[in-house]
Structures are given as structure tokens and as C-alpha cells.
Amino acid sequence: MQNKRSGPARRTAALRIRLQDLNRFQLAEEMTQVDTAEIVRELDTEIARLTSARKILSGSDVAAQPKRQPKRAVTTKAPKAKRVSRLSAAGRKKLSELMKKRWAERRKKAGSKAK
Image (cartoon, one colour):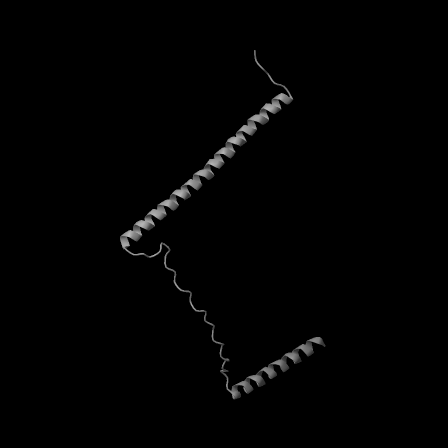
């Protein structure tokens, strides 16, 4: 005799199956997290073991922490010196006259176009 479910009973059974699948997924995820935590713990113990072995072999009582270099002193940059002009006074005057002449020519052209 087959037990066929209909309507709501079928949906309920399908939901139970989906919930079981979700639970399996969560369990797998939790196992992964546990495995990761276990691996990290094992690595820490291995590091501690190797550090103590290194200490014994080197024959020193230096702490397990590596030596840190002292911080560098903060240096301030020297203020920039004023720029030195590369033009002589005569050169600046000549350049000024040339630019004034150029601007006067532009004003003439602009005035003739406007009329």
C-alpha cells in the first residue's frame, strides 16, 4: 500500500527535506570553521615548539619576540629657498616692452573686427 500525500502534506514533506538539506549545509560549514580553528591552534603550538627549539640551539635568553628596529626620528623638511630670477633687469624690461606691443596689436585687431 502506497502512502501518497496530497496538497499541504506534500508541501510540508518538501519543506522538511529542504530544512534537512539546510541543516546539513550548516553542519558542514560549522565543521569547516572548527577545522580552521583546530588548524590555527596546531600552527600556534608548532610555532611555540620551534621557537623554544631555536632558543635552545642559539643558546641565548633572548625573548621569543623578534627585535624591533627603533623608530626613525621625524625630520622636518627645510623650507624651500626663494626662486632666483633667471632674467636680468634689462631682460625683464625688454620682455615687458615686447608684451605691451603684442597686447596693443591684439587690441587693434579686436577693435577693427568689432566695427
